[in-house]
Image 1 (tube, rainbow over the protein chains, first blue to last red):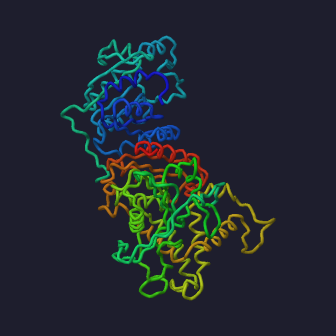
Image 2: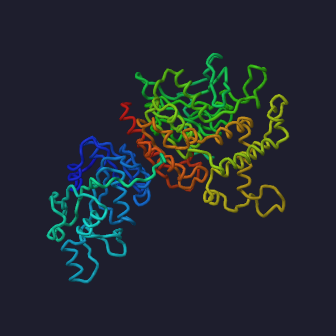
Length: 217
Length: 385
């Protein structure tokens, strides 16, 4: 059903996710990634998607999908219901990225999160040289119509992970459809080079998931 | 409700009335029992060799077993010919589809108009109060009598959706998948209030005779018609009513009286007067009461997720309509959250429409495609050709 070659970021996610695990894909779109995870890795997948078109496409593919909003509906999933929560290139579109990130790691043992790097040299150059909001391949929309309301650099993101007591188990740079390249996101050079950072996160051993009241009271 | 162009499947249907002997009573939540029990049902398609393709469709408050067959009283095509038929999401070429009249109903299953074996006269108000769980229990008796151990799917909208939830709570091991459309996990105060208006209208009709109208040879048609008129408003959205009727008049100019000046009045009066031809007033009382008593969480220590604890192997699909204010999207979301909390595999979609609760029965392509996708994927998983 999936036409054409597998996207490089999906390839990297497929590599990171353990076979047979329970996966929640937040903002699953039309379910391409979930279908790959189900087919290639035998995962038990669940999608969360806001658009009616995406939800219909997922249903047609036989995927379990809940129509909802990552900003609002994560709170209703029970603690540690999944092995992985995936949030692909949408954290910067959330109203409360910090809350969403901590929710992902309450719901799941591990999170796979990718964020466009606002520290990349192309972005810095566009702002420095032209004095205009950058429009790049990873961030193609003009400032007035971009869905990206909370942009960050790789270093901003790693600082947030520290703040939330999260451990970065793996990180890869993704650039312009090239194969993923493992990086140390704390290095300044990577904060210059990477177009997008893809992170595998978990809670640090001493940090228990924030207790919250689920539907079992 | 207005039907779109449809083809009833009269020649291709089976069914009849299953009569359970007196030593196989239906045991009710109230502690009472019904014996002998009769269940009227229709079937479409053939049960396959490994009996894995059976689908139970549960009907709504005023529905019946004439799912995709010409209705014997109204002559209209079945109530879900848009969904059940060749090439449609529930295709009789693929599935063995069963639809039974709920107990308490008036289309052949045992109800208040049936003969009370103790008196030889119609039960009327001697009929015991029933619940949604009692309806599901009776359906389970029928399904087992038909030689089916596991249903591929149980499907229903509105009250039918509540029966679906009850099946998932009470008989999860008998289900492969469950589709709950425009339903709620409980009846709200507003839901109960509207039903009380309907019941009050019936009981205020002098021909109701404390329920014993059949012996007196009369029918509380006026009261039942008013009950239907009030209820029908709750099935439509404000914008659908406005779009359909606005302030359009029946004739040129006002009558300066109380005739049906407005088209919406005439429409409601027609809904009321045609309803009484096919429905029994006491059945309306009993079935609305069953709905009012429905509170799935209360049956499970006040925690809805507990109702689904044993249903983790069931594939759920929950659908709601954006303009439904009778059983709104937020109620469906409560169901989905409870399913998620219980660790069930659940899909949920809110279908954008201005048709209100009645969208279950109307031309709503997004509903068809959701049903089609979910059922096809589940059938593949189940190995149904």
